[in-house]
Image (cartoon, rainbow, N blue to C red):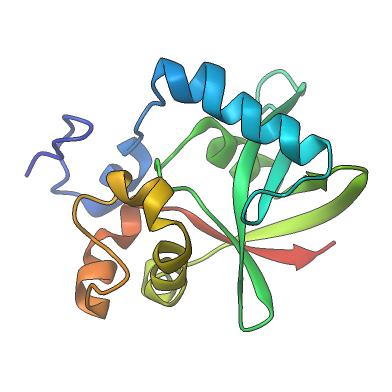
Length: 164
């Protein structure tokens, strides 16, 4: 089976999870993300936005990107709707990050969820941000069944944010 978004074979779910990556277009990379990051750095959180700061896995230089921080039943989560992005790869190596809104900085440990645990997070994530990220979910939405969410879960890294 081929994923039409990436052109990669998705018959092996674990390989597909590592290969699924939807690269941002020029508008997102050069206009939208910098705008949201600038607002967030000024202390204006846009629907839960944070600036994630994590050391690059090869250079050690701090890399930043805006992310949506989701709270479910008092716990916080980060979801990567574009798949195995650079921030995901860096966080997997570092195991932690800093989340910034204005001058408030939180040092956070990150624990990646198993696929079986993701539907309970993907559903509220899509309820809140489908208008922004729905295009990356190929017809999957907040009204999808648990089975449908589980079927695509491997392509969407989800991290629990834990105290460090």
